[in-house]
Length: 300
View 1 (cartoon, rainbow, N blue to C red):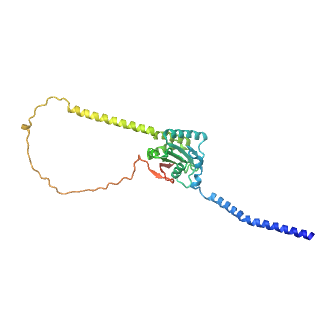
View 2 (cartoon, rainbow, N blue to C red; view 1 turned 90 degrees about the vertical axis):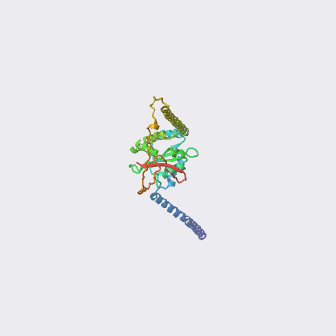
View 3 (cartoon, helix red, strand yellow; view 1 turned 30 degrees about the vertical axis):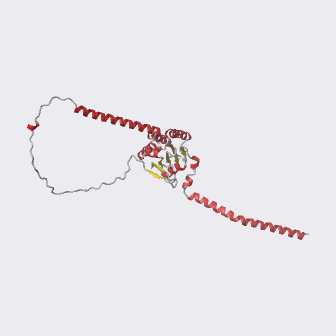
């Protein structure tokens, strides 16, 4: 009986051992694969820079907001004040206005980042998606790498905010406080300048009509005055003039002269073509989404 019991226990122990060994062999590749993947991921995060997809993860979270501060520069009260001003501007002037603050744009240029944030963030008013987005790159904390870029969208906004006016807006932002690190003051100065540049469609139409009426009125008054002065001079009553007998006092003499052509000299000058599009125009480009954008930027 003892021998039979011992044999049964041995068989049971051997069965368990084989079962454990089999399970270990099955799960060992999975364990090794997980360890290798974890190590690879850690290496990627430590050695690879952020790409565009990673940078635009916040777009879905902040889409359409007038103020997006991913750099953590503005206080809550400053964000609320600026957001209220941008919202009032957008609703009254039918142009979507916003500001985005980031510490870095990764492997994208400031222009590409601003354009894509506008396009994929759902910004823009109406079917033509009129709008203007201000991107502020705050840099690395030591004053280096700071940039400001303005992206415009929509025919009306692009034509209104010309290249020269882009420079005026950037001057207002930078000189208004951004250069000294006071970004809230700079953005408020930027909004003040924006109000002097962009008008609502109704305001623009009224201003155009007023300008046309004033031009027509001024032209009419000018033509009337010129005509009146000419008629006044023509019909002005003058004193009697002494009679002059032209038949008796006039003499006519005919003479012939020669004017021979000796030689000719022709000088040709090549007129260079101008490559400038004019300071009053707006330069445009195409973003990654295929939309047309205007704008410009600079470091500060």
